[in-house]
Structures are given as structure tokens and as C-alpha cells.
Image (cartoon, rainbow, N blue to C red):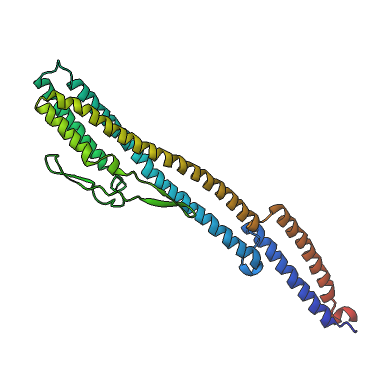
Length: 294
């Protein structure tokens, strides 16, 4: 086969074009840090990258959900702690007022303190966090306990529906407390009975209030224990999500991120080859008719 000057020039241009394309690929890899910049560069890697990215995004969404559950649980736990202390104060007052040495005036003075504690418990039941009443089940935009201008209870309407938030694939965790177990009619009825007993100086009724307060304290402790168990489970789920995020992110990085040492070495090698191709091409193209006629 006869090799013409045109064939030499054509092959040279094709090789230079291929060399330029490789240089472009390596330079893009070094500048972006990614193995591919378009799905067409490597469809398999691109498809795996989309799947890994979806997995990381899903895990991060679950982590945000756990933060929301944490917010509910931490605030509920703090409120129940305050409620327990308030009820213990009521019990101490009942125990104190049951003493025979106290007269009617002294018990009447205690009555004022009990009424203040009752208002404090109402405030706790109406705890609002970020615009949500956390002790009213799924009815978060309504106060569970309504009071009039004098601070007297008008209505107790507790919603006991569980607020369930998805914290892992297929796993929903209850974030709220069953408020009906704590801030129920019995609690405030017992307190009102205690107040009336103090007002009427009825020592036997005051003594009965001690047992009632014990029941209410136990209800609150039980609700807090149930909440604590769920908080422990939430912590385990958070740890697992953190581990999953690390693995998924690492896998995604291994699939997409470039090996800089390898990419830079290949870029330098390709640059050398490209210079050699240009040099060889210059020798082929350079001779003209005038060069032979000299």
C-alpha cells in the first residue's frame, strides 16, 4: 500500500485529537476530583453513584427526624421532671398539714401555696415547644387544658394519639408522652379536693390526699420510665444511622472520587506523549516543495 502525505497528515490529526481528548479527561478529573463528569463517561459508575447518593440522602433525612424526636422527648422529660417535683411538693404539704399541731389559719395559708402549685402543673401540661403543645397528642395546635381569667380550669381535653416519626427504614418511634396518664382529671380533682380540705380544715381528708398524691407521683414516674426506655432506643438508632452514614459516604466516595496520585501521574504521562506527538507531527508537516528545491 502506498502511504501518501495526505494519509500521514490525516493519521497525525486523528492521533492528536485522541491525545487531546485524553488530556481533557485527565485534566477534568484532577480539577473536579471526580472520576466522571458526565453519565456517558461511565454509565455503570454514574448509576451506582445515584444509588449511593440516594442512600446517603435518606440516612441524613432519618437523622433530621431523630433530632425532631429528641426535641420532643427531651422537652417532655424535662417537663415531667418538673411535674414530679411539683407533686412531691404537694405531698410534703399534705403530710405537713395532716399534723395535729396545725390550726385552721395555718392550713389556709398552705392552701394558697397549693393553688400556686396547681397553676404551675397546668402550665407544665400546656408546655409549648416550637409552636406545638407537646402534651396533646397529635392535636399539637390546641392547649390540652383551658383556664379562665381567674386561672380556673374550664376544660381538660387531652388527645392521647401517639405522634410517630419515622427514624429508620420501616421504623417509627413514638415521640410524645401519653399525657392522659399524668395530667388527667384525677390529678386536678385530687388537688382541688386537697385545697377544699385545707380550706375547710378537714384533717381526715387531708390525710387521704397523701395517698392520692402518691398515686399521681407514681403515674408520672411510670410515664417518665416509658419515655426513658424510648429515649434509650432512639440513641441506639442514632448510633446505627451514624455508622450507616459513614459507610455509605465512604462507598460513594470510592465509587466517584478520583485517585489524585493516579490521575496526576496519568496526566503528566499524557502530556509527555502529547508533546512527542506534536513534535513528530511537526516533522511530517514541515517539509514543503520549497524545502526540496533549495
